[in-house]
Length: 279
Length: 323
Image 1 (cartoon, helix red, strand yellow):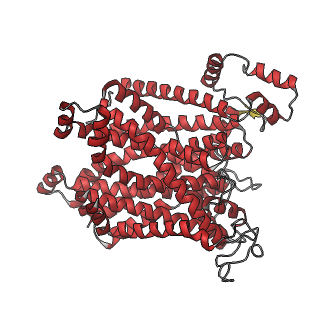
Image 2 (image 1 turned 90 degrees about the vertical axis):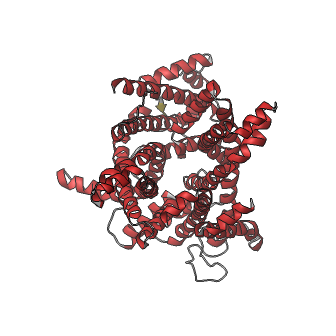
């Protein structure tokens, strides 16, 4: 693990990504403490341009709500949805992939057909349908993002398990009579973890994009402010007030970029052969 | 080749059947009794009407029979009735489909052409300033939500400088004909297609670059160089052709994302395609229409995947796609 951190810190994109992520987490955790007021409250006249009042640095929206406060509270929703839905997707995808790769044969066939089926369905369209039918809430959003994002995890884990299963130390565990679940959990999965971590960091980024797109379409949790919702709300008044759409979008861009850079950095660290190529 | 196509089509039909079954159960997950919901959508909710609807749509029959009726309906292109729009769902979708195809195919062409071009450049000049620039450019576009790119496009090209129209398929009331009409539609198409295309361009750029660098190190490239072929010929005929394989795979994988992106793009630009239709269905909670569009999107993805499989086989004759 120490090695792991060392190698991330060696790649410039990993460092930049990590700094961005830590900043975003800091804002999400501590930001709302600095802004005890609800981001839904009217604080100033509507359409106050940015950089005019120091108390409302990024201006106000059509209802006089503080854009900056909205962005800070929005960080919580975006990061939380991104992390939780990725975790749920991992919880679904890892066992399916591990079982498919470990047991092989018919089980593998059945599980992989199931996975392929989910990969064929247009994911964003399915997410829209699921949230619309389950009614928009933070739970339905997390569920639908997890439902559309687990298949790559299952496929990746399956591939890793397939190659690890034939290793001698795993064979040794089989010969000594260890149970299947013990072998999978203790011998195989820990060694399959690093590519999963890379994938997970990219999945958090995709989940944030998905959440913002759902909120933009009006499928966000009606009680929680999020970046996608803010852009969606500012869309109709873009001609009068550019700042309402511009700033939350920048926040999405920066967080997603940070996570992608971390993924990149991790990948460089784990596949040094590929990364050397570009330099 | 023919049996390969037949197999793929069969596989697609099976997947489609599974999607239809999934759809059937999703409709039943929707809140409320479907008959009551439909009656509400039609603006009447008395008991007799609800009962009539129940009988008309077979909702009083056992579930397996209902499923059979539903599947049979879809097999004959009957996707149900939209009470909000007072029209057959299939009719609504067919009206809107050409606009979506125009948008997605243009966006796909833009993203593939630019992506392969930039990726090739980046790989050719790996490690230089140009490579870094292209990589950063791709990373940034990859991290931007499509709806935001669309709005920034409008802000830049429609609001700040009045170059491009910000919404619609053609100028309303202009009634252009012939070439003038084509130019008008093209003007309206530029921003939506670029918006949708740029995100995918970023992925193709990254993929092409990585894949070309990978192929470049292989022995047959060294052989080609030893034969004294020029660099340009090696790049084009040996490296690029092989490097395109993973790009084709990626294009197939991305078909679903492309359609999802079209939903957003069409919503922002009021482009009259099925994505916009899905958004309208969403606003009105018109579940029949929503799920009808969903099935249509799935069929489009299946067809696109079939095409990429065929292209894959053409690009790489080594591959036996018998399985």
